[in-house]
Image (cartoon, rainbow, N blue to C red; front, side, top):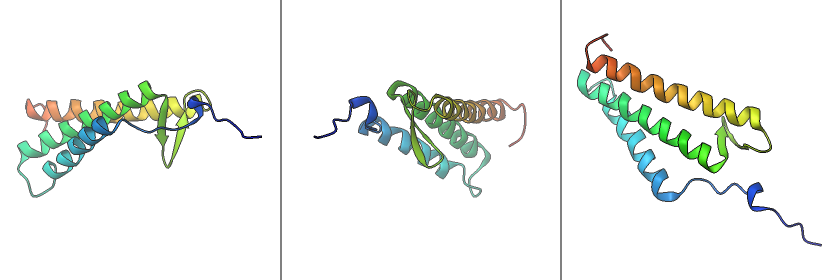
Amino acid sequence: MVNQVSQEDEWEGYPTGRTLLCAAMFFGGLYLSQKGGDVASREWGSLLIGGAALLFTIMDVRSGWAVFYHRPVSRSKEPKLFWASIGTGSALGAGFIVFSVGAMLGYWNP
């Protein structure tokens, strides 16, 4: 007898187009935030990294799957790990955005 796996149990990953856009934002932010760049490009790089982190978190919430450290976790099977991953990703993304916007406005030096 063949074991049928339900669609909820299969980890399908991210939609390709959105994933590529978010990955491009993330790597663009890494490029801009290198030490050799000027201060304005580092701030924009941090803003792009934070935006990409928030977009990845939003995609995780919508799909019901998140990557916690090295393995995918399901919202229905491991809710504590799933929401820990969502909380960590959203806090990091929001932190990058707040600190980069604050540096752009001159509230602190990066």
